[in-house]
Image 1 (cartoon, rainbow, N blue to C red):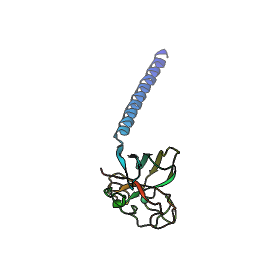
Image 2: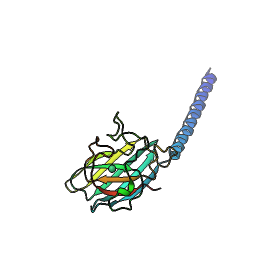
Image 3: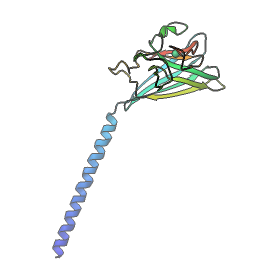
Image 4: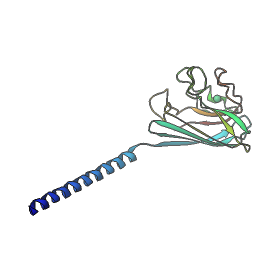
Length: 188
Ligand SMILES: [Cu+2]
């Protein structure tokens, strides 16, 4: 009887060890998978346009099918401004108009992001600069990608434009946001 008890105890120990080992393998596999998820980050310098002093950095990060934009801006007039993605990555003109109109690959009306009446893929919206003219703009969407094959999502080759004025979300096709005060091209 004593022998039997000892045997079954041993058996339990082995089983437990095997289970622990397989948990270790699972944890290692999970860790590897996390490392394999591609996180892509691209960063650009915004340059002043239309005689403004608006500069800053804009960063795009793609992770888990979502692109996050962070724009850190200085030199703005305090208050609200519009920010959009425009059609071209070309900031060569002094007024920023070389970027063309809004990036609108789905050919929809201009509007507030997410509006049922429609919105451009570049319709990021408005943000507020503080009394010192600084602002941080955060935006994230799964409707963009960095360099994928879907032209209705790919932001590479587009331009980032900050406007002097406010997007009214109704005027077509631009939101009547006024002069283009800062620009960068999204070039990979
Ligand atoms: Cu714009």
